[in-house]
Image (tube, rainbow, N blue to C red):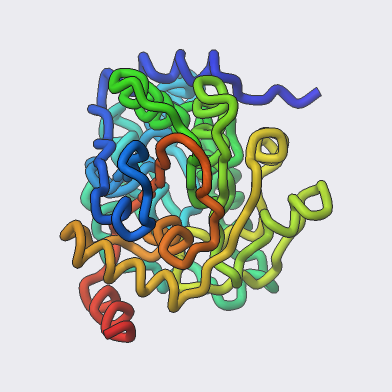
Length: 335
């Protein structure tokens, strides 16, 4: 029987994470409260993972995974595929623990994600994302590195140690809300492979069992919404969106049971709605976000979520790694 990550695993991971990282800030958004016309007793909070050393949440899972596999790795390299954020997270973890990291990334990944990954000492090899659904080149390259270079392969999301590390961010949210004596009505988070949401959902459901946990996807990559509808994992063979970090083909096997049990609903947003949210966040908060990070706020701004309830709303901003020229292009379309 498959062993799933638990809240106990997340609490254990917290001891690992705290040795290396400070909590990402939970920022009250007065602007979102006004935009959503919330009554004075309710608040909106943005969990901004753009403040991590790699500019996204992916570092949490990568640090915990690396720490738990040090003995197995030994002097062997670590290999993984990534659209970019797990790449830099694993590269940072490799730098932290003195391990060689080899990453397989799409050749059209944002330049900032290549730069961050290489800045922490990782080696990058690329593939053609546009044909990968036909060729399987991404997985084949990663597997060949493991086989031919005796590397230990890491999953960017379908792994309990990654899920548990990511869940530490959920504990951070819980601790801050509890410290301020707040109640939580809605938790809004993006879903791709499911490593971010699975970890956070475990932490949120444990502390706030009545909170509604809402997943957000691009409408061109809504495999999780389809999965919820039919009660089993659905694969989308050719996901498409400007949200490059949300284009997994399906949610992971380790993630699916957790998501199925804890996520209340899944909503989708269009790329234009995400562009509008990117511009809104920059205007209101001075934060330049990547599309994947802005998708959750897009769901709130476009009223995709019924927020009528009693309690606060937490929305996850998963990352801020966007090339300046792309940010300008996408936000200019909304002027």
